[in-house]
Length: 415
Ligand code: T4K
Image (tube, rainbow, N blue to C red; front, side, top):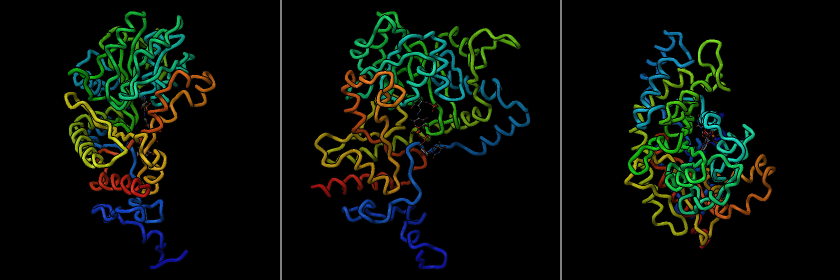
């Protein structure tokens, strides 16, 4: 390979260096500046959606040091108990049961509620919501969404109820609450259980009440890519003490006490090292939310002048975590969603197409319901026009401007 200096490939020299990144050297004014047209990429280190936010390291090492001294590494240890207490207080709920991840938490909540037969949920969600049902031989029945809110459409839910339906799982997509009251009304009237996949909605509120206390139970994900993480982790929040007790047994093989299993069970325990990360990151939460809010405001300002795309907004009267920055590509935009995504990937900005193509189009569910799409006209309208952009504490200062300039240059090249 050609080199300009010994051992340094030309390609590397042309790329922006770390110091370039710090001052945001690459300016994108025209199509010729775009990496898809042969220019150097804006970032040599990729920018990810879901780069973890990490709180005070000294605090984390202090907690894990105590953990090692105690030689109590998992199984309902003191850090886990403290995390559950603090989470319950923060959410204003009676019980929080921490779990090893959000998917197992969904499975256990579904099991503890006694859901069987068919359960209604959106197709427009991360596949874990549907897999948690499928894994337990419960049929996920997909209902359509409201294209404005991206959340379940209550009228569509009602249409999908059959004599086999036992429950509804609402998803608070992007942290914006599902139509909670309308779903509760349907559940009460039709004798169904209602629970929520609140994986996106930790630290968000609805009508002044924290998400976590609605339905019979709400499930959070604390995966590394979530704005609040415990490495891997999750939790179920509920105001139902009896339900919480059964979920605690279920996460520990069904054991009530030594040698006495009283429920079907699995291993859903969150280890102490994850609880230490959770306690560390709870203290860091205000900083992360504030950073996300500032990024969201900067994106809103930068995208306001771009015709053909719009940025999803959050209700400022409520608590929001702003962890998802969502751009929707309008029908009249001369550039397609996939072209924008390809342009950003070329620049080293790994924007995502959540939740394309919709769960109903993924093999396990397409095999079950090859014609499910007929009942879901709004789902592709949303999943084919959404782009998720990076945010969080790891986002370089200049990134929002750079990303907006890519959108502008792409549109300019078509006009
Ligand atoms: N329900 C809903 C509505 C959900 O959104 C999720 C999870 C769940 C349920 C299930 O909860 P968990 O069982 O996961 O607790 C990611 C996350 O893995 C997933 O947790 C999340 N939703 C989903 C929306 O996004 P992927 O497969 O698209 O992305 P992933 O994990 O490959 O990460 C994206 C990028 O982030 C990576 O390419 C690199 C970067 N990254 C990732 C990790 C893990 C880092 O920089 N550092 C890291 O440590 O699913």
